[in-house]
Every structure is written in structure tokens, then in C-alpha cells.
Length: 265
Image (cartoon, rainbow, N blue to C red; front, side, top):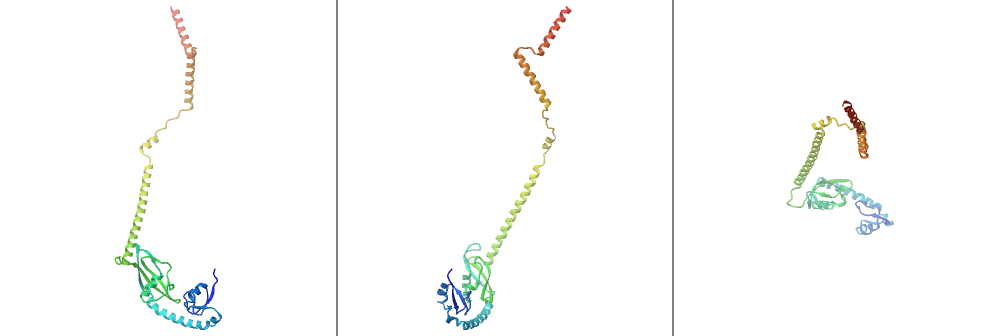
């Protein structure tokens, strides 16, 4: 950081100090601005001896400036100025409007102020009306009305433009609201339809009432197993050529019948 130097102000410097004040400033600022414009002197011994006389003179000048500012306030306070600017889209500007443009508009009306006296927190980037504070003196604030209008002479007036923009915004808001409400109703209808679909139909009720086919129990399985075993044994007996139990019984019965016929004969 550059070393600062002390200077004695021989004039009031806005946002720096009043005549007779000793302030510390960057050397370049003093060398390139304060000294060439006779606003300050180096705070040497000889200059410091002038402080008292300078302060008395500064107090007198301060009172005169405040009186002048109060008189000027009667004209400036509540004044309306118009600044024409190019429009990009609807109310949006190509560039912006700031303190420099406001100072020029006031100068066109014969009011001279410094850009540092115009308090604009942010530059204006849209058409519209704005309230701006102008500090005519540190104890005398004034408020002016700034109208940023379209520079196109064939364009609608500011009131018509702002009214149309407000109307369009209301229409968009209403459309968005209607759309959101429509979605809500559609969702409710879909939910209602889904509820009806979930109700059981008559066919489903009948199906529910019909008894389910019983699964084969262990007994059935055992019977099937016995039948399969008997069939398997019979097949084996046929293959081996040995008569099974049923064949033996048939033969015995046949022999018995023959014996009975012989006895009768």
C-alpha cells in the first residue's frame, strides 16, 4: 500500500473535507488533482500557520452554501426530469441511466450539481419512474423524479407502455394460475378414475366366491404310489414269465371246475 501524505485543503473538496482541514491522501491524488487545481497545499509549517484563517473563511463559505442550497431546494425538490433512452425489448434498455445522465438533464434545466451529489444506488435499466436523492448540501437533501422514456418518437407514451406491460403480466399470471389449477383438477379426476378401477367387478366377485380346487392330499399321493408299484410288479412278472397271484387263482379255479364236472359225470 502506497504511503499517504498530509495536505492542507484550501478549498472545500466534496467527500474529502472542508477548507482548513488537514487530510491524508495518496501522493498521486495530491500531485495530479489537488495541487494542480489549487485545492490543497502540502501540510508544511508555513501552510499550517494559515489553518485558523482558512477555517474561519471555510465556516463563512459553508454558511453561504447552505443558504444557497436551501433556496435551490425550493426549485429542485419534487422536480420531474425526463431522460430518453433506447429500448431493447418491452421496457428493457439497451444500456443504462445513471448519475451522469441525471446531472446532464438537470444542467439542461439550469441546475448545476456534481455527480457525487446524486445518490443513485443502482443504474436504471428499464423504462419507468424513479425517485432520486440529490444532496444539494450535506444538510440540505432534495428528491427529484426521474422518468426514463423511450427515445423513439413514434413509441407509445410512458404511461401507455407501463399500462400495457402491467396488463401483459397480469394475463400471464392468470394463464399460469389457470394452467396450474387445470393440472390439479386433472390429477383429481385421474385419482377418482383410479379409485373406480380398483373396485372389484362382478366377475371378480364370482371368482372370489368360487371354491378353489383342493390340492391332492397325502392319501391320494400314497394311492397313486401303490398303484404305480403294483403296475411295476406286474410288468416285471410278465417279463420274467412267472405267473402272478391272479394267474394262480384263475388256474386253481379252473381245476376245481373240472373236478366238479368229472364227479357229476
